Length: 268
Image 1 (tube, rainbow, N blue to C red):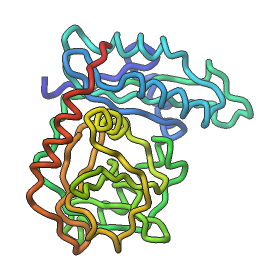
Image 2: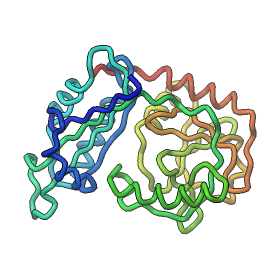
Image 3: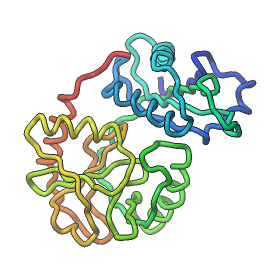
């Protein structure tokens, strides 16, 4: 249903009494996924992301089975939806955070379909704190820099570091195509689940995936650019600042589509 919005905390319906604790969501991390017929691609990577981020932020983690049980509870049989899993704590003032101090908030919303329109993006110099973690503070960069990019007539923002090396977009990873290989920025960025799944699948299909620094001065070396996140597996970018890319993106789009289709679905 289009107006679907359900939240459950630690495997039970969220109540008004829980609202004060929701202020602590920024003291945590999350992962987002698209569910189709109660299946998701890359479930193992999502669980590994949650476990690794918890260990780094809190020194402990929520048992994996508890997260799986929470996902199973909130997704009805044969259901398609969008899911966001937040792990957070209200015990951020404690010296030692324990497993029992961690909470799992799962939000279920309607399905989001991949975007069909290519993006034009404007670069901004920005470096996220703990870029390897999908944490609550990510929102500050999204709101500030994307708003400025849109005010300048672009659709979104693409981050670069002090050396003008490209890292990532506001809520997506970026990849480049030179006509033969896929090139991903080596500059620190959030390792998105989708780009990880595509990378493994591309290699299996004989398409090399290379990680190296990509500077703004090297844009002319690439034919096409694409972006990925939990919703999009072959979103296209036609413009970075004033540099325009080849509008014929069928070859790259087909390569990414085949790689995505080959990724198996995991049952929740």
